[in-house]
Length: 281
Length: 290
Image (cartoon, rainbow over all chains, first blue to last red):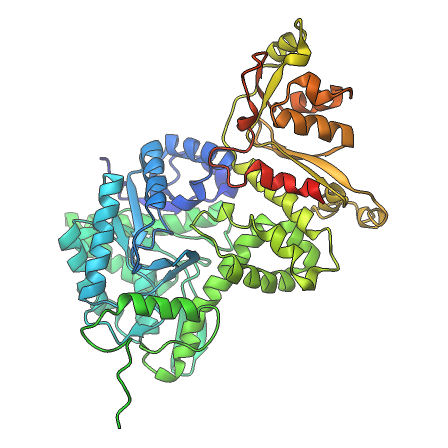
């Protein structure tokens, strides 16, 4: 199965469709949220069909609830399988988080403690998903605002074990690393030093907003702003270690003009080309 | 005496399900659950509020995207509060947010704060029909010359038409088309005033082959003919003595006839609002009952 190209990619927004269609190859791939393409027909599928015919595609799920305590929704797995079969994306990714409870779907990525019990559950869910889709999935590290007394292992140890036990890959969201480290008053570089980079199949970069708490900043992962400088710095450090990786500029709220996204992609391209040079040297 | 151990933090026992349940319950109301930590424990509630805001704002924004005219009619802040009450009572059942909100008309009917806006449920039904049309299955329209040939045969009255899956027919005691149009960007500012003494209206909502979702105002006869055709009645019975020209013209203009068959056994009715379509046709037609 072909992989995503080790180039910048962009979140696909329907309002940019005409500009994207007029400039095929402006970036190496586009990423879509799987759940937006679960209607029967109409404009969403027509646009995605056209987008896919010109570009590599990353299918990014936001609704599977892999980190949930209950069983996965097998109807949702079937819908994902239908999308994978229809559009043959180069990559499928989901989150280390839960988003449904009981019969309700909550439309957010909610946190779980990291311990042997939750690791077993997440690995079962990853295995089940990879089997249902007939492909490897990339699991994304979350943005954190809190931690749990019930956690007995670090997030990086949890992800490393999940990779070893399920064979899944990882989606490294460098913005989430920065947001979480800032919020939990820990060190992003230590996190990245312990991150199983060899399993990373894609990188996400995004912007956030900030609130002030008495103890310091609380960053909110909004995907609605330019990638901030500290995230670019961490990203360059990762690429210097890994060489070029598919890198998504993730922008989902307050979506700007397409040219603004292209500017962000150009900045990622410069880092990727630096990484290529660094590795070749 | 020491306090009994907190079930969320006692080591060696299941943590996943009780923690998820406690967090899920606390997203909507009540105190922040035990077992959470932060560098400064005083700030746990502020941090948990991020999740509360994400869930409430995310669902409210999703509902506003699907019901923009309802949101405009009640105002942004009111809509957000109402969406919160709706989400607590009728949360999405799966991640397909484009299908969430089918229960909104019924909810509005029983929601006292909007009792002064009795037309709101039917406006919501019209917006559901628009969303349904946008996402409905694709189906090629019959070529106009083939359809014309079929309808000019020996017994046009026995012909049954298969309508495009995007078609919904609505009828309301309120001027729903006028209200909807008056609340579109660039609408004539006088349009609202003219609604004051307006009568009930019927509408055809559908998606054209060029992917435009249209809202057509129908007279009562045309609504009756189209509704009967949508339910699979042959043309003669659907017309029932009325002139079906206007109904057929609309269908033809918007490319909404996908099949035409003289076979009395054939029932093209299920073409309308079926498949993975979220709202059964009969649900939408409840607007007729008012």
